[in-house]
Image (cartoon, rainbow, N blue to C red; front, side):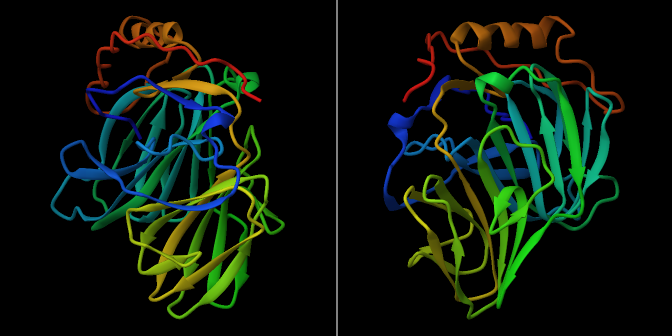
Length: 321
């Protein structure tokens, strides 16, 4: 999914100076962003108070939207570099196309993982015809410097490992949780898991104390470490935890995101992650004037033009230890 904000700001993210090294309970409120004609997303990362969680650098939650008489998701071809996109659905379907030739329909609780590396472009749209409801999350993972120029590729995994306990099913999207590991390729230590809880469940999940974590509420009523987290909001939890208490007041859906703090500072703008202002400007120019990001075949429509880069000059300071 694209960041369609035509006033996208250059933002420095990452670096251990932004990490809370102890357990906290920091509730993040979303910013509402219009995505195309019929989809509004709730943007949790980057947030005014929190830029990243581990390598997770971007989180949008959307739906559930009734799109029975609407076109649904319609995101024209647009570029990415320096990141991975994670498409995750609870309801509906999304048709993915990209410049490597990938064509894949992503369905609920199937992993669509696109690694942009040095350059890729893709489109996302609701199929025709499509299901009545659309509900999901779109997330980005920042690639560390050693891997941010890898060749672009796309992975689809319909069968993902699960961790179960009474009243809890945890589907491991990326990384590993309680001994279960996702087949999705990762480039830094992290975890992403979809948690389904039945009403009345009280349980806990094992965590890595060196990771920082956050929990996104997708649906229902649940308390995370004693804090009510409503759908469309996210609770940042900091580091230093070995377990996470969960209590469901109703059937509930959550997403657990975590990872080792991302020690490099990055520059993020529009759909690009780089290290310098100059890299971002070069990528924007390449999307507008050259074939660096390739072509998306089969999409019925024009590709997305890039907004203007702000005049502000930004440069990440590199590795922070």
